[in-house]
Image (cartoon, rainbow, N blue to C red; front, top):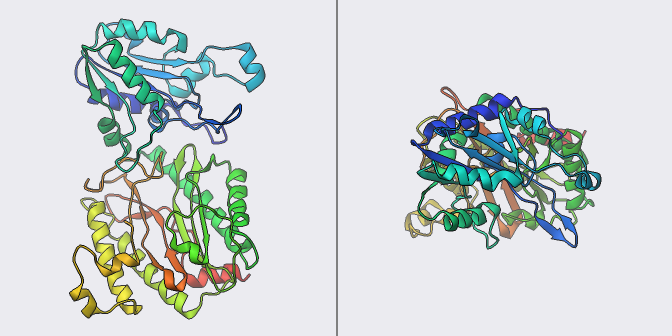
Length: 429
């Protein structure tokens, strides 16, 4: 792994907190991520399933975890299963995790090999009344490809049909949504690396370069700073492309006079930052571009103040939409009288700002946490107002990652340039 080792007390404490939420005689069974086929005889680079990493720190596939706090066999209350050593596989693929290494990483006493999983599970099912299973329940995501967790859920229910099965996702969401100091530090590191990449981008952006060249500058810094890579596929969108919210081609020529919208974040130790900035390709905002940029920046600064305990994403969204509506009137996109006459179900601002402005971040860039859940200290969310004027090829988004505390919100990206004057000064050094 590229990142500094994480103290195993972090993972053992996460398991203890999860087990404290489980009712009597219940057991939790989790599967790691699996290698995903790319093409031919290749796989995509492996990335661990977020919940499995949160509870173990293990970065290998073909692993399982069983938690059974009331198990009468003490050594089976927490069991980690890893792939058995194979000299042939090690020769071809490299180092394989040993039991001692797994114990040290996860802070767990009992480590067995994967070929023992079924036998141990069969024994423990005799003691358990209920079984917690883990699936990805992110509300806006679905896939036709059945993941390892889904296949296991179907298999165990078929093999042991008389047990009660429960959802682990709500328990883990309640734990993961509020970050520990360890997690805040890891996310701060991811934010700092992201900031270094943005500084590099400002120095290297100019007319005549391609979007993918700017992406390459980001990736160089990420690799050089020991990040895993991108927390999500980056958006490097010049000119009209800046008005496509999830633009990902990143293959067009940058033109003088255009804006360049960037949305990217480093993933460090599996924790992802999320930054958006918009810069002038030629190093100088036009008068109209500057007016639009300052409008979004004003709203950003006011929006950050809303990231306090008791507020909700839903409330933040509504407040920002109202602020942006006023700014849009000031920019001449529509009038106050037209707003009074608009259809409530189709407000005029929606033409120029189509998305929400906050989501949780952590082990996933769109991390666990619902938009109606009141904010609490330890939560980290994005703040990302924007404006998209297709007719003028102006797309602007400004985004930082904000930590909710007992007091004022803490901007984890406060040191990353955001003022138009500072951006222009760096670009014209």
